[in-house]
Image (cartoon, rainbow, N blue to C red):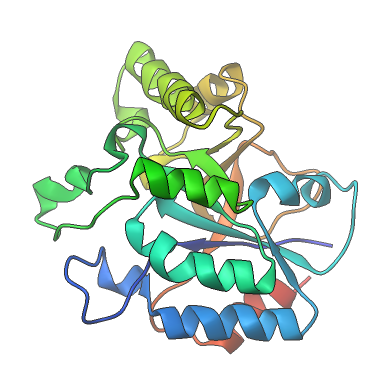
Length: 233
């Protein structure tokens, strides 16, 4: 049985300013419908931490992964209440240098301002049973920098988040999906348990836990689209 991991970015209303990549900004009402319908059909949404035993073939069930890239404040505002209501867990991957900041990595392409979660919001996210993952220090393409810099981005992101939380950070997401065998090896050396990409696909128990594909959810996707990605075996 294969498993899907859903990949979201922002959960925000169209009236909100600074929404990141509008095609990847899912309206809160749509996110609620997607999650509630999946729950009603017997599915459970899980963070990478909680999904691990299923990905490794140690458990089986109607499960799917929920992930959010970049650690945007809109996820705390709009997604967290739905996750708590349904008793789902999710992994949000944080750009460690921008806790309480914004999407500065998008400035070169003229993207609008989007607020990242504050330290208080991240602590609440974790307190509510949600997972904190790392998305590098500065959201750079890890395949385009030196080994020393890639190691710093990957390793110190974990240290910085762990110092803030007081708990282990075991999940990583490659910024821009930029991954190579060499970058993957650095992630392994940094002792991450899982790492997700932007490659599209489903996961089998024998797949590489540090090279996991995901299913990107876009603004135009209906709950039926999302169901098909989770239900196909």
